[in-house]
Amino acid sequence: MVIAYHVIIGMYGFWLPNDERGSWSQFVGSWELLRFGKATTVDTRRSRANFSFDLAKRDAARSVLKYPPVKLTGLQARAIGRGFSEYAEKAALQVYACSILPEHIHLVLGRHHVSVETQVNQLKGSATRRLEQEAIHPLSKYRLSSGRAPKVFSRGLWKVFIDDVEHLAKAVQYVRENPVKEGLSLQQWPFVRPFEE
Image 1 (tube, rainbow, N blue to C red):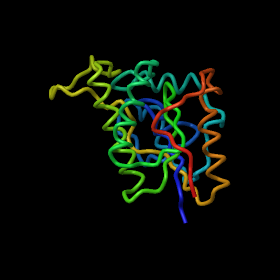
Image 2: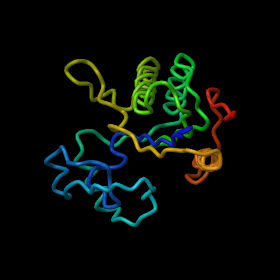
Image 3: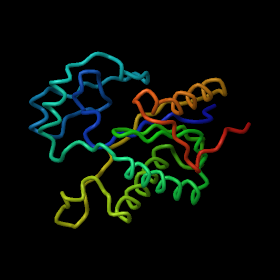
Image 4: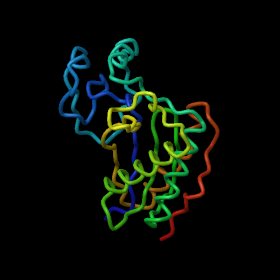
């Protein structure tokens, strides 16, 4: 039985649908981006982040995106954490680990009465509202005719199902230590709680 999920949420432009390391995308929705290849669909749940790829090619592909890839500042990461906290409290989410990095976010979420996809969509929405409230949305200068800023998060999520306590402990440790791998400090968020059986 699934007891939790390890979730990765990308910022806009973080992992492209035609990334050489593979993606879960079925198509490339931009003609400019399609020049760099078709979608590289894979069906594995194992991380491919450490696979080799052509950095120059990825940077060239990112350069044709409609907006610049999002890279969060510390203030923006803090605002996202506040947004997550607001929704987690309101919805009684169980969040066992969270690391908000410049280009992506790792979460370990407990099982809930709504799907993990719904949980993540609500977390994204709450974080976006917080970025707007604090007037630090990273794409605010590219507002659409509706007045809304483009989406800061990429579409969808990457998830791994966790079905035992040992796997959960490893996922929590991995997420907690992830900022250090990127040269950042460990993060402590008030909405993160330990798992209780």
